[in-house]
Length: 601
Image 1 (tube, helix red, strand yellow):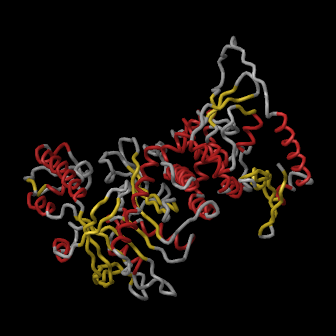
Image 2 (cartoon, rainbow, N blue to C red; image 1 turned 90 degrees about the horizontal axis):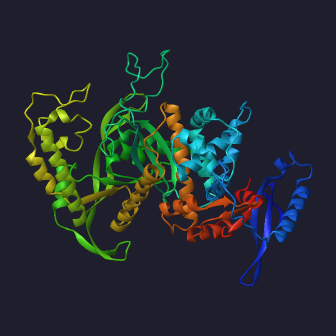
Image 3 (cartoon, rainbow, N blue to C red; image 1 turned 120 degrees about the horizontal axis):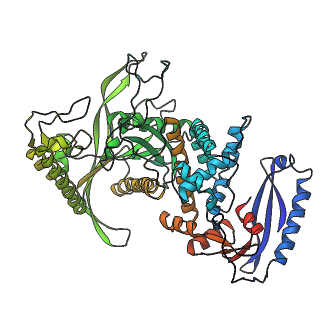
């Protein structure tokens, strides 16, 4: 090991490097980044001389510790005390955390603040625990001793105080992560994916806003405030609990870019534009194709991306949207059921042949948009026309799924007709559209009694005609059908990201109450998602997230009756991390000092 100063952009940083042989050739690799020389001079009079001495000491210790005899006392007994099994797998995530320079971010954001605790250490604990050992903030704090590194110097009250600090800096944090992740892996913004999901709260009643005479939320002093998040809305699993909505944007490779939260009773159709606007202002001003499912395919969203007022260079962004066939106009439906389909033989992920039945056209799409009147702040509806590429395809597998889903909803609709008191606006979602003469109380959401309810047989029959058909539309007129299909299929990655956050990271139910703490909770979830996706990218996407998490959770060590720690697990994924991060993870025994160096503290 030796000290190596590297100067880049007039800034000198110090590193520990080591030499090694590969294929008969001598090479060098970085072992540890020590920091900027100008920062180190604040601590050491001569940083280069100091760290050369440290390198010499480590080289000497390495020679002495290569062989050690371990004596085991078979009569030793256990005493009540702390948890002795320590996780070291978090060190891989910490390495990415440090490469993102998140420690520097929080030093920057807390500079000049008088704090009795280390906010960055609290944030790091919340993020690492969200990935590996998810739980409530209280549970995370109480189980902090499961890590080899001591997470101390702060109280549970301090954890909640840091949530306020995280909320203050959530957008700056998202931007920082994007900027610093560009040095870790490629961030491709030529195509981005947007989707929405919701997270429930295990509470009986939604929050209520205090409103002024204009219906806007205000605080106790009458000042305007954001609406409270925890509201009832269409929860993905049809739960009646209050929810908060999240809109997430990822890059072409499925790595999260930015997110936004909004109350559970608001439409997702309105919340794509604020996130996109932030990306265009703060991340990249280059042309982007935005991909979203049919729930976000509205005239206003299309016009926002591809309208006629896109700045000085008139550069329009693009879109690829799913298109509802059943909700389309009569002309589009007639075209869907008409002739002209072609069949293309493709291969699925398992190498099996599948038949892609499809057709497409370029069509002048009429949009009813809400636009600002020139020279005025007022808005009005007007009709505009844009050219749009439309593609429709048929899938028997999709047809079977639609039939099964509808059968469930129809059975629930029949039960609703029989026992309407069992349902309200939320619990009737999906099945209500199959019931004639159904109405809900605007205040309570309950079904209005005294009306004759019948099954809408005509609607069911009409839907059956379109089973199996799916449509995709785009602004990219030169894009062929297979390109449209492949780009749109990328949305599955963002759905998988939501699944990771909800299942593997246990981000729901949400155990915090205020908007500020909810924002902070999802800021830590977002950071955790970025870390695991970056690790997946570093390992060339060879391993599913759950398998990587399992390996990192199992990479533990236990203290022997000497100063040595015994490691208990090693697998293919840890071996891949070894090669990617230039670490040595397959030693069965390590000293306390060696593990500290491995974890860089």
